[in-house]
Length: 66
View (cartoon, rainbow, N blue to C red):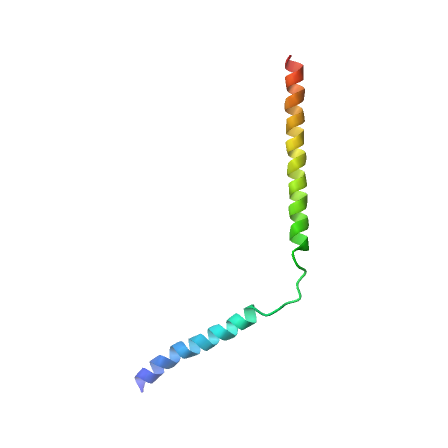
C-alpha cells in the first residue's frame, strides 16, 4: 500500500503540472507587440540622431582644425 501512495505523488504532480500549463498557455486578450515595437522604434531613432550629431561634431572639428 505504501508503494501505491508513492506512485500517486508523481501522478498528482503530473496532473497539477498539466492544469498549470493549460492555465498559463490560455489565450488572453493582449495588446500585442505594438507598444514594444513603438518603443524600439523611438530608441532606434534616438540612437540614429545621436550618431548623426557625433558625426556632425567630428566633421565640424575637423574643418576648424585645418
